[in-house]
Structure formats: structure tokens, C-alpha cells
Image (cartoon, rainbow, N blue to C red; front, side):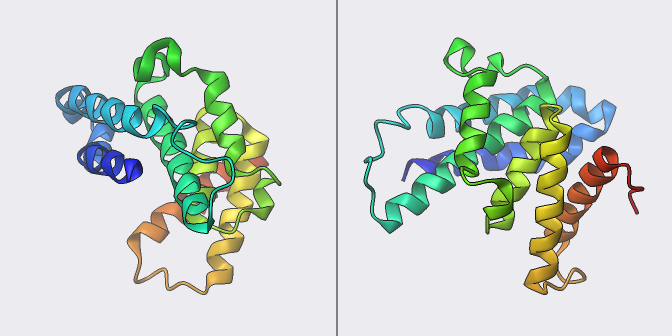
Amino acid sequence: MVRRKGVALAEPALMLRDGLKDIVKRELLIGDYLKSLREAFAVVYRNFDADHSPTPDAFFALERRRRINNIVYYAAVYLEADRDLSGLLGPEFNREDFYRYIRMLHPDGINKVPEMGIVHTIGCAYHLLGEKELAGIAAERLVYLIVDSGADLTADQRLVSVLTDAIAWRGRYRGLAAA
């Protein structure tokens, strides 16, 4: 599967992501980070429309949705590091394309998206694009999904990180204090 190839390429970059927060480490890591993201993005983005049937079965529909999520997530974390999407594929992918793929993740509205990971991707993307209201809606949906899942936050550090993002988006954009 194309998406799995992209994940393998992105994994090294995503492991470096926290290191980018340190100014000294950032200078050492940024080149490799952006290169890995560009490679992963190219794999999942190129030929996207040609690789998918207009009437896919349930498995292919799920794989397509996950691939869209990867496209949006890789673009978002690239934008976070570089602030310029043109470094991904040049003119082949721009802000309008980015918005189109984000909307593909929530065609019926953010509040209808049932997957925490996809809502998190949507929130990250809108946050980085400066779409305050949409990032806030994603934050509210994410908090709802986390609470509704009954997940044990003490046992899942990744979930704590996702929740922290949601609280930051909501607090920053809805006038609430981030606690």
C-alpha cells in the first residue's frame, strides 16, 4: 500500500519533531526532518486520484481516508517547520490543495468525524493555517471524543499530547485559559 510506504519514510522525521523545539538541535535536525517529510509526502500524494476507484469497497474507502489523513498531516507538520508549503512539491501542491484535502476529511462537518486521529489532524492543519474558529471546533470535537472513549490518560502519553493540543487550540481561540 502506498500509504504504508509513506509512513515508513515519515517515521524518522516524526521521531525528530520534538527535537526541533530546541533551538540548538533544530539547526542540526531541520534538514533531515524536512527531507524525510518531503519524501513521505510525495509518496502518499502523487497519483492519489489515479490510485483510487470512484466507487471503492469498504477496505479501499478506509485506506483512501487514511491516505488523505497522511497527506494532510505531513503537510501540516511540514508547514509547522517551514511555514512554506512550496517546499513539499513546488507548484504541484499549494494552500488551496491543502484546504481541499482537509475538507475531504470532514465533508459533513468536523463534528461528524468519529476518529480521534483524523480530528487531531484536522485541528493541527487549521491551527497552522490560522483558521481559529475551525481549529476551535476541532478542539471541542477532540475533547468530546477523548472523554467519550473513556480512555485512561494516565496510561497513554500520546493521548495526553493530543489532549494538550486540543486544550491549547481551544484556549487560544475561544478565550479559555489553557489548564
